[in-house]
Image (cartoon, rainbow, N blue to C red; front, side, top):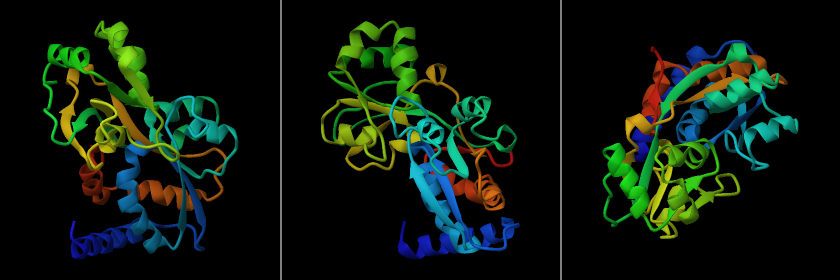
Length: 266
């Protein structure tokens, strides 16, 4: 996007954010924990919120789930500062049952799909049907998947459902994501895996790969990215204002361009 268009969009979003922000009279540091799937949209929307509100967003990244010490559930259990949590909705539900986030403040922001990439210039395999997708898995020389929600679903559920777990797990590699790791697509771009899977929003903005498409609808796991307040929230009014802005109709275009389906107004 050209600098002038970026500036115009930021100005528009800032004006919208100003209309949605009420409450806290003083600028505050708002601690946000966010997983990679919504981060592209957040990186566009967050500066507008900061400009309009005067608040500063202190952002910590990590997977929605998994065994990494950087995973958001692990961070919250260690009592790292968190006002707003943005991650896979099902993981928020799990944290709310543990009393770590507020169930009543949860708002679904976007629907997400799992997609596949190959290295730029490589032939794009057929994944247009369940059988074609299964064949692509069997024929691939190497496979990469994330250490978060999409990768856990593939490696523990989908491969077995398709009857290919024994054939593909030995040639598959789990990729540790940000902040200390990298997107699956980066591994594919270097030629270290022939095909890679992750949420579409985490694939399409990585250079050096070609997006093949979403996996067949029959095989998708319904995934929503949601926002909520942490139980230990310190900046409640500012956190509520941020969630309200991210869920607004005006934020929908940035969410769509990030590769997600916005839920505002639905």
